[in-house]
Length: 324
Image (cartoon, rainbow, N blue to C red; front, side, top):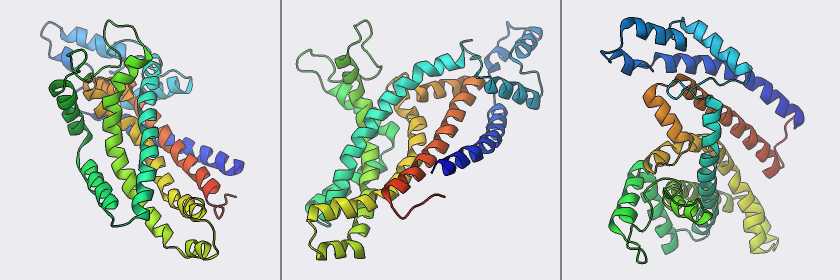
């Protein structure tokens, strides 16, 4: 396993290098630029614009800009934001914990809800419970997360009032109440809507997937053999069928985790959550190249790590899998 892990890490290095070149060219080739607003400002002369471009290194050829950027990355320097002139590492360091908190809580609740729902649906196929879970799952999958977020704000912030305070039932955005002390209860209060919106879409998807995987596993020969040998039903379901049914789900989760990390963009933007998704959106709007490249490359590293972790979990869950 250790040899396999080292080989995968070594293979990831040239992959990340090629990927960084492609992403760098795509980001720099996008219409507009960080100086688009300055170029439209009649009070800024052409000479001043040229000085700005030279100070930011935008007057250099693309290959020279990439070499300078890569050289700084290899030294552990993510650069400075064009818009705020702050170190990119500092900006990301402030946002990552917020995103990890939001996504971590939502994902933990998703797994805690999706697996039991999917398993119960598979154990009682075509029952009223299965039809109910199926209907709600299809509804959750069909609703875009940004639309669901706006509807949640409309219902819980605009329409419903708190019976004790007379104000909105739930806050519409932010991480804490402005002007108030930062307490755990206030944080949880602000997390209810964004976490609920994320869970609604993820539970719908994972529960349906696990139901299908569980149904296929329950009809396998080894499950019927275990049942015929008189093993307790609980051991057959959770020790044999459930353990094998979760293996395809590991692949799905491994592929989804990086996209979840970046896909919180809509939720963080709608609910004004100060996380990585919102940082990416702000950087994309302002063409803040150093911030954009840092966030994208972090997501690329997460994709590689997530797939590596999935392979290692395969060996843990399935004794037939061996890595030489």
